[in-house]
Image 1: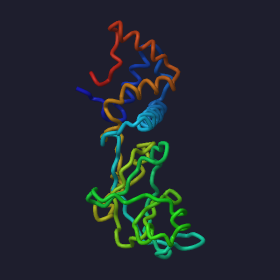
Image 2: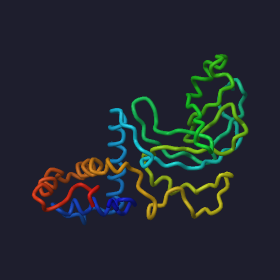
Image 3: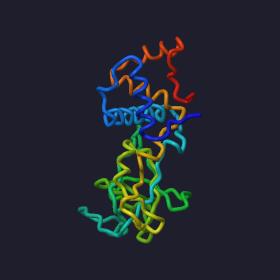
Image 4: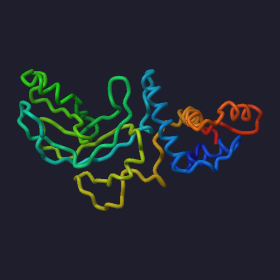
Amino acid sequence: MNELKTVQAHIDYLRGLIRQISDDSVFSDKYLYKTLSDARSKILKQRVNSGYKPTAWSYNTICVPFEKAEFHDCDCIETGCKVMKSVIEIPEPVAIKDRALITLTDLSGANVIGNRSSRRVKASKYSPISKGKVFWDIVNRKIVVFNDLETEIYLVKAIFAEPYDLNDIPKYNLFGECEDDSVKCFNPDTDYFPIDQGLNSDMYAIALEMLNVSFKAIEDRSNDGQSNLNPDTQ
């Protein structure tokens, strides 16, 4: 049974691997978490660029309220200057070759809103393709939705580069209301660390390399029956 779920569980497992051949006390939990987070982003980026499709376990989905606002720019697109803008800044998602791993949908999750560059649309604002079509872009770390001034809440689904950033975002309900500022979109003590279970071993290998800990030495001990490198068999 795999017990590697929370942030602390992953940190403890990585620390156990280090301890097999080195002194783990030189690394703080905060440092090990940051290393794991960077290793997670790296392996996911490598795999997706190679055609791998991450499962839902690598994603986080959050409710994000929007408000009517001005799109402060030098000119206006076809629909005018009014847009819907997220009330919060969006943490940076993992980016691959041609896109970021983030989608915007309505509350059903079925209707995906297209992502287009607002600059490109303004340059071709008279094109019948872009005229009146709802789309979104990220401007100054906020999501801006064009051509729909009615929808006040969307679902944002993404592989965030730093899951812990969600700990700064309050959890909103389906009405766009924050009932309790202390309840966040990510609780590192109880929520799963977002990574496909099948990628755990590769994530650890990359993390150990970042820490200059010999992965081969640990692997050799595993082959000798002195340790178990595969976290999925724990």
